[in-house]
Image 1 (cartoon, helix red, strand yellow):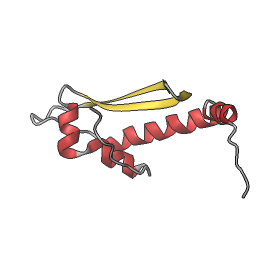
Image 2 (cartoon, one colour):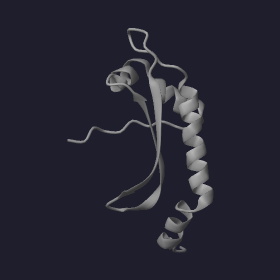
Image 3 (cartoon, one colour):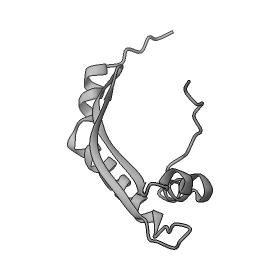
Length: 103
């Protein structure tokens, strides 16, 4: 049986490259555009916030990331009730998976 050895430094460099960065940013903008115009229960329009950043962690090399959120103090509750962000991500071609709660 053949052994496969991953080039972790090469993969990290690829994930930090301009092509991947542009693809991540473009996908993030597509998700944000798919959200539409969410409103609060009082019919106030809620701004969709997009933040391009570099993600990193204990076992992760730095890589491009995009945070998309509803710019309201009720954003989490709105997402839980209406699923604006989940539907927008699915419409952009992303596959959503649930995570177990930590803690």
